[in-house]
Length: 373
Image (cartoon, rainbow, N blue to C red; front, side, top):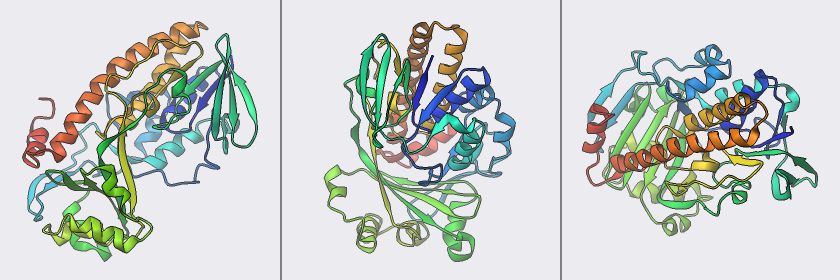
């Protein structure tokens, strides 16, 4: 069977890797020209109950541990004036070690035969040929056919329309991404505020969140609950004007925090949050399925990358376990994925309200005190 995976993100790579170690060949088609064609985001906390299980299934757990950022699980909560409300150190027992997304992705890439990933293959169209087969057309003018098509191609999936009419919709919140480099030397006060791991400084409708990365840089996401039109009116190509506008939303906040807005070493990048319906599901369509954000796009909660990894590994194991009965395997995979992704999507919406709802930051402190309540 010719298995085609669209997208060389964590989910698609995990799927290909677990299939590979069980002797099943798959091809990943990725639109990027190379693994380094664009940045891969910041730190990820990989959870013991899903992401780590996927890496174990992939035979990569020990190599994953070598990538862990010691101290990265430290969590700090500050109020808008910079007062420390919570400071939880990383004692190594948290079960959610932090790694760089790019390094984890490269680990998965390196674990696959070189021919597995076809770079520079941007999918432009899919056509059903019947009998579970599909024709894939790429931007470079080439086509191929496949007997099993897996959409691991994220929020704007080209594969999703084969199984669902659902479209990603704006969630009502956007993040502005910034970096401060060499922070301990150049931005010491802000570096101390962030600490060794994650910072949350949140209030109703807004917040400043940051991670310390292993190289000493601070990677921040400035959150605002505003209509899409608010951000559309900002010219993010005019770096100074854009950051002045965003900083005005935090005019009475501590300079140690607002430096993450005003002193950024890179151009600000707008990350508008989009989601699929919480109960997104579809009826079985022969020869095609989805994993990761293509299947269950939800607000940031720390689970997105973990769910993608787990989806990929679980789909691979379903295919392996059903011994050639691929449609049965896909049915098992989808039923289990629908249940877990819907539960996680409900929690993700709750977490966004914990962060930026009317009771912030008190609600966040309560969440950390009773995370499973």
